[in-house]
Length: 403
Ligand SMILES: Cc1cc2nc3c(=O)[nH]c(=O)nc-3n(C[C@H](O)[C@H](O)[C@H](O)COP(=O)(O)OP(=O)(O)OC[C@H]3O[C@@H](n4cnc5c(N)ncnc54)[C@H](O)[C@@H]3O)c2cc1C
Picture 1: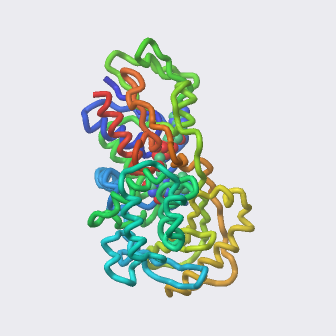
Picture 2: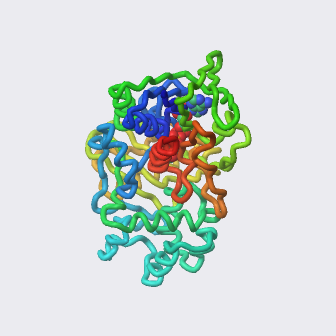
Picture 3: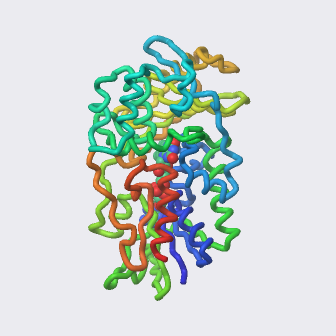
């Protein structure tokens, strides 16, 4: 009655925890030498990319609480996100939740009464269209709020991003506490991956690294064996499998599976910087940087939907980004030194960070692909974007689907 979970990203970790909670013996097979997948710590401890979790991401928050990691997540900007518009140098705090917009100084750039109506219309269920086209009549609001939100949440340019998926996000962030944004205080290793692995091991799960699934032997409507390089794991009558793989790997081991084939990159620039102090999370409009995370010892820049930027060399990107960071530091009075000289910078380019959430994106396949095999992964989310939250939900759903 063993549950084999293949893939040690967030979806696989959540599936393994759910199966253990249901009393099943669990073996987690991960191809890499460490867990976390697209939300991981690199060998030197740097995050592959900044990950933010909103209050609306209830499954993600629940998962972090379940593994005892939530206390490591901090809300860096409870009074609204500091945003600098490089076009005119204006600096303001923006409430992510419409509930915060009753204060004039917390409203997004470009918001008007007509704009609020347009956002309300955008949040309603309806026909799918490109967000950019839907908001073409409100260029200031599109630039000042909708586009940064779409790029951050859907990792897709507004010209092609699905209004239906954005609507689902907008409906979620409206509630009390739903737009509170949290980031890992120390990093994804200590604040997500390590506590999840520790919880699994405490629960008696076996975790196997460097175990790359090569293929699934199918007999009739069930998986009969898993092939891991030299090793073949035969599946007994009660054994089950959760495939928690990224879409391209799921399609490789199960040929014919319909998976998303278009992905969008996220670029992160990590600057070394001495200094202690509070964690900060700030936004930039009209620059290379979109979001800047300041943590003791490091500053990380996020550029989502980075189709063009991911092709640029770090020697070009770093000075540009550092100039914008210095402007942010000056606009919001960030403590410490922000010298002209560009500090050491490392670029991490995740070329397939998430599926592109385009108009008319095909629905994911059935969760239960075989009688004893279910699919998980952020890409299995039919309504909301591919995120940690989607990955957690997919992992739990896969375990439920197998009964
Ligand atoms: C730079 C970046 C920034 C992001 N920012 C955010 C954010 O701010 N907020 C948010 O919620 N989400 C964010 N995301 C998205 C989030 O990271 C993903 O949605 C989530 O981590 C996906 O988890 P997953 O388990 O579905 O897939 P993955 O993380 O891809 O996990 C799949 C796992 O399977 C393993 N594997 C692959 N092939 C095999 C095989 N053949 N056999 C065994 N194992 C295999 C992989 O090594 C990996 O560990 C970001 C992603 C990136 C890349």
